[in-house]
Length: 263
Image 1 (spheres, helix red, strand yellow):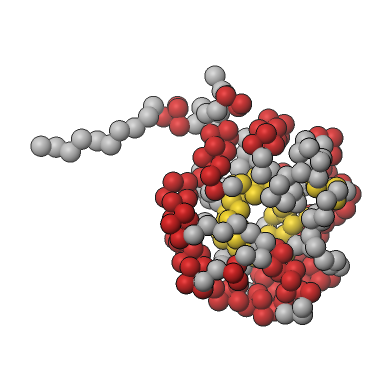
Image 2 (cartoon, one colour):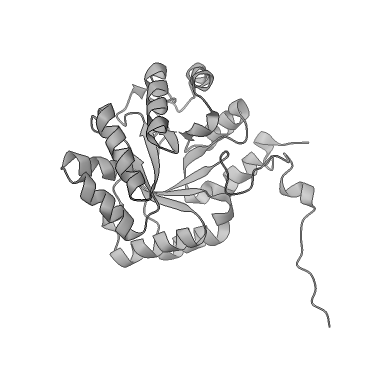
């Protein structure tokens, strides 16, 4: 008896927008923030949604809090799925503040991470230091992401400063720049105290940067994701996506949810 073929959906229903770029992709990237998933939850995430994830950030300074075996397992599993995985920039800031940035970067490599995030959301960092850290990450074979924006409540986006930072970071070798919104998406960056987007600032930024693919917008709330996708296109890079929301975001990108329905 011949084996029955696996069931499949009509091809047009896989992506009604007919525009979703396949991985590896330069646009439409999804970054998931992992704030403490255990082994089984992480494996469930990869089994269910790895095809729709580009990057996983081990949030803020949680990396050293894991049992070493669990952390290395997560890193190895993510890389086996072809994903970029890296510790949050706040951990790097702690290393800079304590004068151990070089040792930190060495440890990032030793643990098996394939990227690093350079940020100054909590500390002050001049252009020279930022450039040096980017260079040191690249020297170690890491993909380097940077982040723009302060984490304290009420810290808003300054367009000219952002454009200058993006140009400097990309020139130094960073792959893309993340726009800070924290895991709450309120009262920081492009979002006001109610989580509403300051559209005029976003559009001003998009007019000034060399390419939209250079930015990754943190947008943890579903309403923010819908708004940005409608305003800037389905191939926008989005980050700080909760593990449970990956498929929901992918459905939004492909027009498979009422908010972005395509017909």
